[in-house]
Image (cartoon, rainbow, N blue to C red; front, side):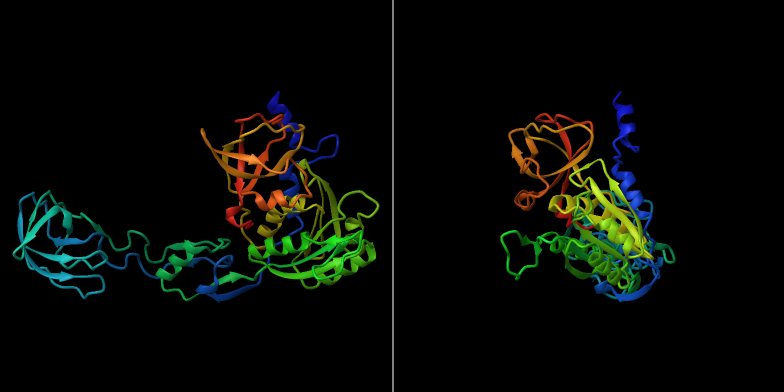
Length: 419
């Protein structure tokens, strides 16, 4: 029964709701990958998406090297505990190679090149040294404590594929190969505007019926954290012609336009009308999602359009889901699922069946271990619980009511909202 209900919720339902996966797929269908490439220095490659495959130009390690501080020697078929060898010299990382006299050992430090003739390194903890000699306190075998040339990377192998988003790990790998520059896709250009007669920008005077716009600054911050170049489209009044004009202007300069507000079915919800008036195409979505049920997706020629709800939490959730799907296509990479972990809820939470719900939550320590607490008790317009939260919990459509101790997927904010 549960399986059949989940299957029904994953398809267009009688009340017109579609699944999150369908909504993301429909949004992504209006986007196409940016083809322009550019070379950037390795110091500016963080967060960029590779445009071409990267091959290794040298093996790693580039030579046989010691994995430990100890003594290089010739073990052959094995040197038993008690064997005694004279110390013939010393080699540290960066020293030129020294010959290893037969039957002797060389003091060697981690990272140093293995001298010709040596086939093992005995750790310094496994010898007794004194009077220019060492005595082994354990058996040493050929290959012990040696990093072989190319055991990490072989020369000529593909290290990174196009579509890989470069992070600190990739920077280290490229730096170890001596790369100073790499080829990446041009940054996605996103135009962001808010719609609403009631909205004012920070620094403007409020009237009795107005309030400051928080959505546009939030989405601008999220877009920048995702590595995009952002154009601030400001606030546009609830007039379909004015909105259409703003969309047309941004479409000439951007790869993606994001608006907040005006995506539902009220008298002042003009996003779909304005999109069509701007020469675009698109569709209105009703998603089995809370918050964030309404949305508009489409395109003006090659510029993708994404209309998000006006309430802040709904706008945030919609960006994390729909925005990630669209940005991945534009950036020529695979969309990353929201990272998370399953944690028990420390209290009961009443809700209705039928929609996937996201709610601000914080991590708490209880007598029974780590748990999460939902903040704000719902409400997609509340910013204080969002600011106090450590992340979002996801509650599946058929999980209702939620009992104390039930495990929920928790998506932490510490990942930086990056999509």
